[in-house]
Amino acid sequence: MAERIEGLVAAVAMWMEVAGVLVILVGGLIATVFFGTDLRGDATRKQAYHGYRSNLGRAILLGLELLVAGDIIGTILVEPTVERVAVLGMIVLIRTFLSFSLETEISGVPPWRRALVGDSAVRERQA
Image (cartoon, rainbow, N blue to C red; front, side, top):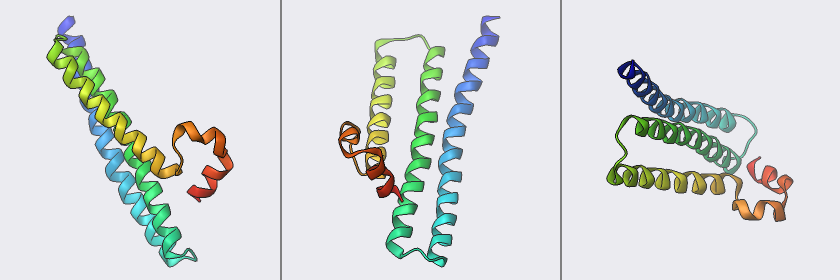
């Protein structure tokens, strides 16, 4: 019974990681299609570029979240040694930093300043 549960958890972890990679790839493709559409439409090159970066950043953010979830679930399977927990901690730390950086890049405002700037300013920047 325990082997079945371990196998199920391993499969879930693997599929979470596969989903993360697919989200990044498909999101990047969709962002590129939207970019091409914006260039052919009435958007300026600058507007199309900023939209492209925002859409691509959102796809990467969502993919990173799924990859982190897969790493955490996968860690359940292995016997938690100090070395394995440290490796997981570093992976989560790096991916969290990337997520934070991308979110700040997309919104143009660090999270601790959003309340001061206001949501409408953040939405205007994204548009």
